[in-house]
Image (cartoon, rainbow, N blue to C red; front, side, top):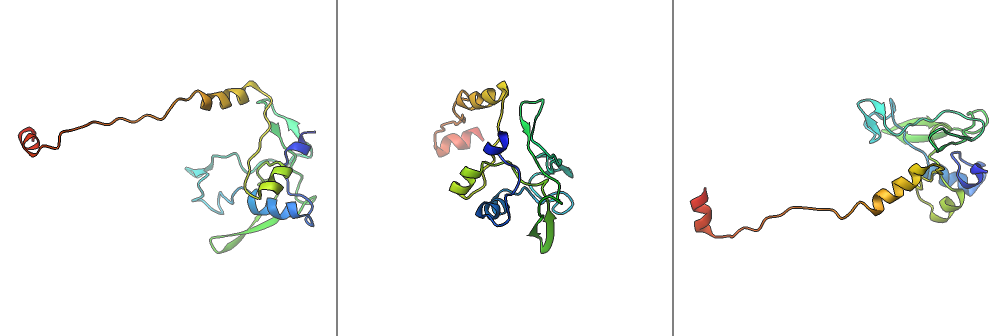
Length: 150
């Protein structure tokens, strides 16, 4: 049921959605192929990619699903050019998305399903965060005062 709402795989290669997912929904490349990628810190991945292959979507202990990512022999690989060399990205690299929204918006949309109280906590944190604050000071622009205090 989750796979109908959110997917972490590219679709049938003959489908328009497949091209859109390849264009907008692949994370990376990062790691050895692109060590200066923004998701790398001290030589390690910070965004939990690449993900593991899973034949079926499972509910994770943290309230977030572990999305289906079939092994490469069941699906095709995608090649991306980075720093003048071609890198192959397989089914470990797609970011989760909603197929309908991706088709409508034609842009990167990271969609996650959450079935824990942490999802509500995350949303409410931003509602009650408050305004951004800054400090400033008014000074008299008097040349004599500046001379006497320096």
